[in-house]
Length: 395
Image 1 (tube, rainbow, N blue to C red):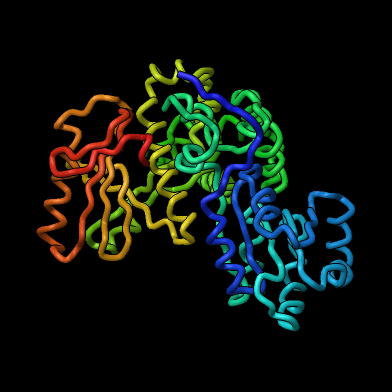
Image 2 (image 1 turned 180 degrees about the vertical axis):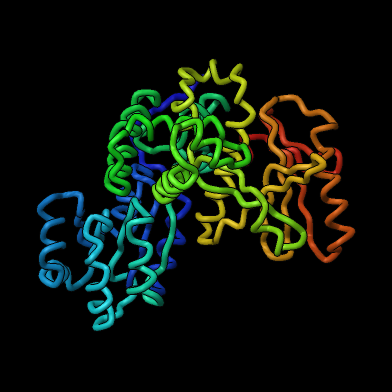
């Protein structure tokens, strides 16, 4: 079980083609995603002839804040403007600029805090901006690179943040620094929390509840905060692309919004770090191994959808009587039912829930096209019990 990292080489991102395509439609492109997901690297690689300017720089930031007209006049031909949430007032001035010259792909923006700027984007740049999301590296992106992934547990434990692979930084060290700097800095900026230790406790409790039904009251009580505060803090984690809520699916869509969502993280390595899992071998025998594998599968399908420029349209299913499905991918009349099992050995009972729900759906909605998938920790994909058993290597 090992991961060999040969030499520095940028991993080809699945979003690149969609990014180029979208830049042909709109004068402004907004690429959002978590810090250190590789947004800057992708934009520089995709648009090498565009001027690059980062608003992480204090000088650039103050120029953009105090004199937005003057700032934009420096880039009449357009530019890549990185971390634009640091000067949110610039968005309103961009509207005026691109209305004068609506050349496609003129300004390429990146943002790491969705909450800080999404309202301004919808108000000022509606109809002028194409929005895409870049998340940490997916399994297929890593498999197709020169980074040799030979162990499921090392993959889950390491996660998908590119710098870990590019710079050969031990995952445990990099993720510890990530939590201490980026997460806590963003939280302080968005919520002005004085007790950062309590927020760190909240993040760790969220990690312990990844793949579980979301219970904000319990999360708040365990952290020592109110339900409303817990919801506010979770919203910041979502806005920073750390985690997401997976809504419940129901055959009656009106009931969809009243069902309890599940909580998932975008990066399994971050979950492992927050849970104190120190090695891939420790993960192999950890009681939350199955939950971590499930959250990885959910995040992989989320990445697949966003890399195609599509809304996630992911759900879970649970009945009071106990029937549940980990993940449902809804693409119009195509519905994919997915169960996740981290073990390497398949058993007939693993397919029971998929087939039972599939029969119910077929009886109610015979026009729907159903796919049944069991994602598992073994090495060989096959067809079993009327479903596809897909190895983690073939996701």
